[in-house]
Image 1 (cartoon, rainbow, N blue to C red):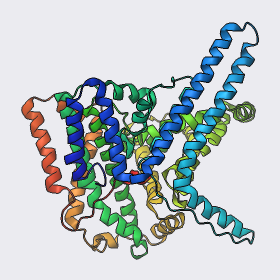
Image 2: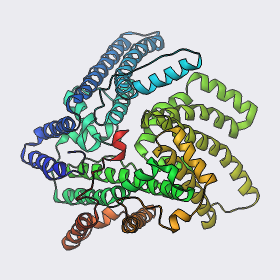
Image 3: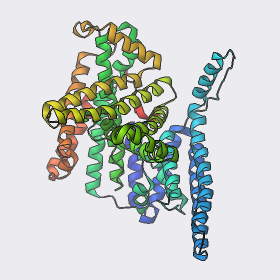
Image 4: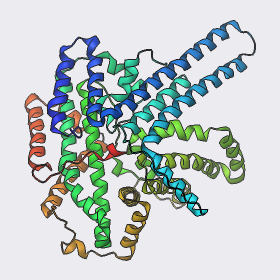
Length: 529
């Protein structure tokens, strides 16, 4: 079993979970979900699941410690008439140290397992600049499935308890299930405690409507993943592995194909995750909202991996923006540069922190740092350009809502996105620069027109099938952009119509899916991040 898309999971583990969940009494259903979540984790990660358990226990215990601190504060406040502000601050400081400990433990585990070798190599390189020879070798342990996702969820839970936006839960099983619920553990979405914890524990009954809606969305995920993303994987991997043998036109086309492949892979896995959640009447937050219709790169990241962007906004961007140093600088820059430019200059500081961490979160490699800094520069510069654009279009009476103007902005954003994903897919930052260099200096359409772009195991028919279904995905996204949900439409059909759609999606997967002799299963791409 390699992922949600394996036969073992889809034909054995998931049906068994559904049956056990349905036949057991309501009060025991959360136990089924928790046991199956840890079973899935163990199958995927083996003994590394121990690190997940350590994170869970630490978060539960330390959140309870903060709760006890606040309870003592409240008792003392009842008995105190004066000096309440100082008393509150004293207990807040105590709670802050507990929060810091929780973050150090959980982020420390993540860094130790995933980033130690990368940071060690950076330290060795820096030492080399000063003539010192330092050889750093980190132990190769591996990482448990979903560590980058559940670590952020653990931190959000602790911070919300510290901020008193959430109450530390007394039920260890509830905290554990919130962190490792199997539909979300592989690639998210990154949930908040108040979004899913209660629903997971309620043991809501399985209904025919949820079974249909959930399984239909899961089949759509199969179509995106197996028909489009997996079919293009061999081609994209071959080109990026030997980019020096292809001309700039092929490399540019491959960057576009990879972006579409990544979208179908990631959004397809999200369809699986949200569909599985729907089976148990648990509403996981949406992670995509038609990102290719974005008019700016900032808007693109509000529509792509939504829960990650929301996490960074709430737990990095705002805390940095409203910190005392940034507030002080904000006052000065407003006076010096005005009310429009001044705040943008200060927000750029917080934006830098967000994108530095965003890049690192995606992986331990120079290409991910490059990717983060690329979007930092684009989004920070975009804020300043937007001020100029608004003034310019107002002065010259340009209709910013007109179709040509909007189409220009969308096309411009797509160009930036394709370049960003080129960086993201490259094996290193130097490879990304080399590929961009070949596109700029060796651009030609000859490789596309004469067929030399084809690689072993990939035929013209593969491109045709992927393109056909990609058009279908875009049509559904276009309808969603206009407020029409294909899933709501499907659920509202009569029994015959619903069955016909379900069978059609299944047939598409069986007929056009990438599998069979010579096919190597492709793990969901974001599972490695």
